[in-house]
Length: 289
Ligand code: OGA
Ligand code: FE
Image (tube, rainbow, N blue to C red; front, side, top):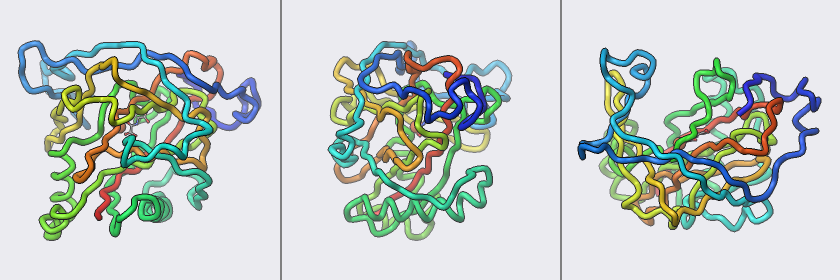
């Protein structure tokens, strides 16, 4: 991971366009979940609790295990992946009117409607989309949110349903009778990505028993994400040199067919020290129908 905050200019390479983008399969260590030894329910601190933990409380009660995996490049065959089957899918050639990504209100006004349309166009059967948050990540050590080098899924069945109740009010019961998906639309802000790419596992290659609910303890509420145990069966992928006009759709929950993709950033061993760190935005949405 590069520590530079610079994006398009003034690396030794001039612009990222001059960097020889690493392509093809690679190997990297991903961090996996290990259940607490005492058999207790796993939890980790979240939100402001991370920087200001209650006295004497550790960050998490479960263990971690780093294991090397092979990560295949989907470049050139990206359209053969379908989030309904693989848990992740791709969209190419997407234009956006949002250029700066430095003002949340502007992002909500300009970028959210674009993501909403993208989901309605690409999730067969979808008739309604509700976007509930976004996260911008930069590799800069001073950035609020950095790439996450830990295999996880953003929600479980429990927390996806809780999202529906939380955001959809009186309509929640009725909406939950139909199909509900939770999809994260991820893109770089300074593509092509040459550092900290995102890897995702084929949903079918990671059995349910290797996916474990983890309480996410905020100061005022408790959410739930999923930790992912290491499995030899896991088939991992990335999309080399992802550009600003490309989108990865990461499905975290589907009430109907159940595909969900474990994912993690990884340190690409081919990345050189003076290459720019990755910047990205992920937008999370409830997709109905
Ligand atoms: C996500 C996610 C990590 C990253 O988009 O849900 O986990 O490093 N991203 O971008
Ligand atoms: Fe995630």
